[in-house]
Amino acid sequence: MGVGITEEMPTVLVVDDTVDNLQFMSGILQGLYKVKVANSGERALKILERGPLPDVILLDVIMTGIDGYEVCKQLKANPVTAAIPVIFLTARSDVEDETRGFESGAVDYITKPFIAAVVLARVKAQLGLKRVSDFLRDQNGFLEQEVERRTREVSAIQDVTIMAMASLSETRDNETGNHIRRTQHYVRALAIQLQKDPRFARELGDNTITMLFKSAPLHDIGKVGIADNILLKPGRLTPEEFEVMKTHTTLGRDSIQHAEDSLGLEVEFLKLAKEIAYSHQEKWDGSGYPQSLRGLDIPLSARLMAIADVYDALISVRVYKPAMSHEDAVELIVKGSGSHFDPDLVEAFVAIKDEFRAIARKFSDDEHAHGS
Image 1 (cartoon, rainbow, N blue to C red):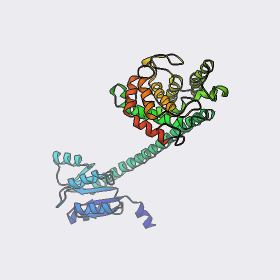
Image 2: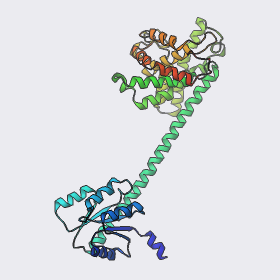
Image 3: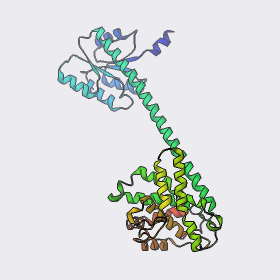
């Protein structure tokens, strides 16, 4: 039973280069605490390096070799020992000396000559504070881990939900292949490039870019509501059929809005998803659909998607056209600057056009599906 009690006792490390002081402190503390002693600062650091760590350290200030101030600074600079409370033992009582001690990391001072009751009271007080500090640190660590776990869980749910919805639309249009994934990466690459421009930096924070990446796959979700004879037609659409196809933007926005309404709250990534689904077919000069928006009235998220969507359509094989080369696709997008596309976004696109090509190759439907 004695061994069990000893193991549960807090450990006090006494550091002093005077044998009498070490014996005096040991006599006071033994029976209440497990006591370790070191007759120099160097010896104390070696004991701490080997472990196990004490719960509190009584440290003489004036010692040969490394003095107490330096020992304390080294302890506080080491994450392993930084939380151990240090009580200085000193014959000095000057304000300057006490200030220097607290600045080096000590939590308390005991001045010589030592009084047993004072020593025990100071040690007990610091051990009580340490227990509270350790408890709070453990709780904070647990809460941080739990928040991180919940955040990962919510993010995973978002990803799975979006990809499930996006894949649903993709199954209706079997020619798109990896179109969803490619456009998702195009949008992120373009947004990151645009973030370097001070005019867009505030609107395109890191979190917004992450949300854009998550939201982009839903740009064509409204195609789920388009009849097969139009959506899967092996050729160009008639003007009447195209008017029906154009409704996929509104259908997409409304389906996402319905999902958000079911949640009963506004969700950031769904807000962007609605913008992208509803407005990615708008054109800079106002000739797009469904609202004929012009210029900066078109949400930035939709303007980004417009370039990503058109580029991928140009370099992809369709039943009514072959794949266009990367160079020709870039040329067409540049020609559309100021009419179809935001000129600033086209400039950013040209700066990273090789990155677009790399994304297309990485997520190619097959080796022949895209222009090189």
